[in-house]
Image (tube, rainbow, N blue to C red):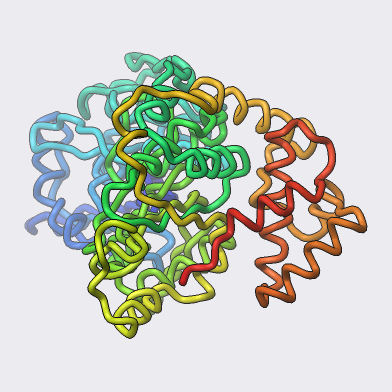
Length: 506
């Protein structure tokens, strides 16, 4: 008897956990073949025995009478999914003497097997390549689609196979499988869409200014206004103003999408935009369930999360956003399991001023009692609201602005250029760290306040009762406003405009 070890993986959230498949075969005459799998396998793995034995027989890899014992290491981690099919079949074949164990070493095998031995792709190729490379394994064998995905991770060689026989032939001779080349067309370049979307929004000059600030500094944004004021259009226009993702961000975005079965076929070319409905469940928005899975905030990682009709979301679901807004990650704890998922998203929200939507409209009267308006606003807690840097009340635009072409103010292409210059100034000053993520020490370094500006901030904090978080938020927004004006220092006008862009709801 000998023990054979083959490397596979299981997806846990958006991460790939490496799993070692250990197999040992003991021949016994006058007895049926007995297969035992230990190591906390799920139902998919347990019921794969018949399918994998059929695939082995189809490819003339007969397992004789006896006992085949398979262990999935580490034994204490729950194993789930079909990605372990290929390493399970290879370990069984090697334990029965059909393959040399050394030929399977230092290689990660991924794939679902059909009963005829055909190899099917599985999600998580990029996450698997990342985990393998960090563990010193630089070769991945998988179905073509999974191999094409794994090939994008730097330092990993991905080999594509069509079926089990090709993998067995490669293991026996070292030939027969071709390395997959990763072709990356690059991040999507701006095609003028963002400028056209901004020009399509008539009026709302203050709101467009807030969009520029949000895009230049990655600040959270809340629009409050009656129906039909363009809140949703403005939120979608913000997505076009965001800079294209860098290579590291594209790898992260693609890894997340692949792990949840939504691989785009190449490296992601733009930032995600997620707009879940307000009826989304708690697990659907922030992640969870059993087994725990990624939610919308993880799918929006490195991109934009738009929550329309904000007060209609369940309060406990909104409160769960507080921790990831600070840390950029969400921690999901269940009995015996702790899962940490990426969630560095930019939040943009929209809401009506009252349940009927017409409070402060000017032409359409509001019929909501004061107590009902108060309860409606109280659905959004102060701590959550305190984490949103920009809050703007939108008036209903007059008909004259809606009926005429864009006139006055800056056009969309000019606003886009201004945002790009501001981003460039911030990058030259502080690297890839966006203004919205500056802490107190970094603000002292990159956004120091002169005596007069400090005096203005002190008076505003006392008058509004601002928290320490709100004071630092004002400084971050003022730094972004200075970048938009190509100003090297934060001056009093920047601080005053930051105050104007942080309207207190009421």
